[in-house]
Amino acid sequence: MDSSNYRYQLEVVQEPIRARMCGFGDKDRRPIDPPPVIRLLVFTEDGTPVPESSVDHSTMIVLAGLWSEDCKEERNLVINPSSIPAQPSCSSSSIMSLNAPLCTRNLMGHCTSSAYMLNDHMNKLGIFFIFQDLSVRTEGTFTLKFSFCDVEETLYQSQNGFTNARGIVAAEVYSSTFRAYSAKKFPGMTESTLLSKAFAKQGIKIPIRKEARYRRVNDDLPDQTSESTNPSSVANTAPDNVPEDVKSDDYEDDILEKQELSEDDVVVLSDITRENKGKFIAKWRRRSK
Image 1 (cartoon, rainbow, N blue to C red):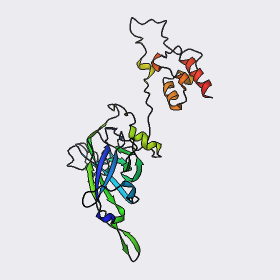
Image 2: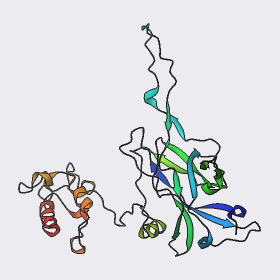
Image 3: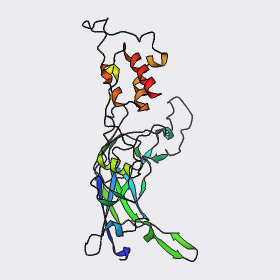
Image 4: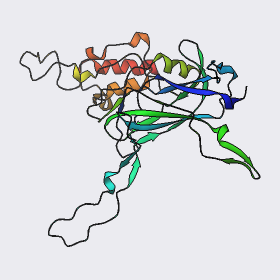
C-alpha cells in the first residue's frame, strides 16, 4: 500500500522522570532519566492498523523539543548568563554595552532519533524512537514535545536530483512532566527499566545501571564525637600498613568502577570499618589480578 495514505500516531511508552541540570558547561552533562522512548503506530485511512514489519521506517525521524510544564511555551532556548553585560557602577562614566544577551540551547544532546524496529520487554515488535542522550541546562519542571515526520515525503525530484523540502509533521505527542534538579538537590538516577534493558540487549547504546545499590562507608560509621563511641572499636585513622592510595575515602568508588567483584567478594560496604578496609582492599586486588 502507498505510504502516502498512512496515518501516524505517537505513543510515549517510557516517560522521563527526572534530570540533573548541566548548567552552561559541556563537561558534566547527565541525560534525562529514564531515556524517553516513543512508539510509532501506523494506520490506513479507514483506521486499520498496519503491521510494523510491512512499514519502511528507514526515512522516519522524531524531533524532541523542550516545553513548559503546561505545554504552552517553548523552552528550547535560554539566555546565557555570561553574555549579559555587567552594569557599571554609579560613579563610572563608561558606556554600558548595548549588545543583546546571547541565547543558547536549553535542551542538549541528540534531539533527533531515527526509527528502530525492535522487540520490547514483552517481546512485541514495534517501531521505536529512543532519546538516550538528552540533557537540560536549567532547573525547573518541563515537558518534552515529540514531532514525527517521514523524510521521504519531504523530498521531491528536480533536475539536479533530490532536494530537501520543508519537513511535514505527521504526528505529535507530549510527554509527562519531569523535573530538572540542581546538583545538590538531585536524588540520583533511577534503576534501569525492563524496556531499556531489552533494547540494550538488541544493540541500542543505553547505559544500564546495576541493580545493587551501595552506600558510602562514611555514612554508616559511628559518630566519633559521640560519648557512647568506644575509641578502641573504631580507629580515627587508617592503619599504617594500608597504602596511601587506600587511605583515601574514595576507595569505595575505586572498587565500584572496576566492577570485578565476584559473588564471594560481595561485602556490605557499610560493615567495613577503617580498621579492616586495608585487608579487604588487599584481598580484592589479589583476586582481580
